[in-house]
Length: 376
Image (cartoon, rainbow, N blue to C red; front, side, top):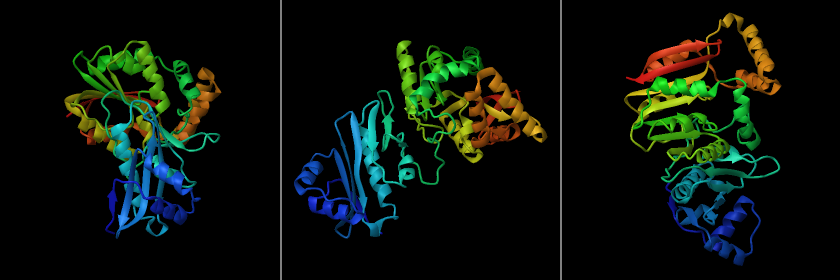
């Protein structure tokens, strides 16, 4: 189909025709003309000199909304909506400021389409979908994900889109982990120096990034949770740390625009991806590192006797319940059931096939592993 996307607002007549075709209420012509005129950015899709689709962005520099994405019924299902959304997101990625709010109202049943672009549904009492643009200074474009790509932005387990979960995260983790000891171990393993750059996937509340930033020139810190990143940014500011660049992205969506990295670190994040997408993530990490660069991976990895899996899982969950309470025990049940923890022998093969040499492999408790790797 020979269609053309052009940057202009629809006329009032074109707009009203599209609204009628998709079943939207008619708006007063004078109001429609004023609204269209005040759009920040608009696109129309043309087929044989006829407008068959449109979309626009409105906003004031802090708050932005994607509005009026409409496609004539006879042209739906042909990728026109994606072309419109790609153009609108390109505009936003080039113009929004740090921590800007980007919202939209999604019709029932189409939220999956917008999730590809990083939008998440608001709580039931707050309709719509939104995202916050997280960056510091030099912004970058994130290419929309194809429909077949795994959606790593979707939360599983604890809901870290809930600010209450984020605020409780540090205190809950302290019941199970020695964060300070883990951080010191990582810094020693990757031999971090003042002139080096590091990328962390799954920065969470920024504990490692804030400490590592004091030992290197720059940290790139990513997380799929906007709320986690905002919390981490505030913590960094309280510590006077200014060399961390935060990004709302994950293994499959982060696009590194800087020089090749000296090290990449990931803790308790990779298990959110199925094994095929783990491989893609590892290949992407390999490509971001300079030759001889270090990759430190700490994650849930199974190394127990599979024949005893029922007894192992029950004992593991009960141990967490005794040490940290019912809430974290419930989280462990969710992780076992709904997440993608990999057996150790598979993880080692994934790392090798991604191009890494495994310098160290340490397994503990039957469900935790640390790998120190070098790009080879």
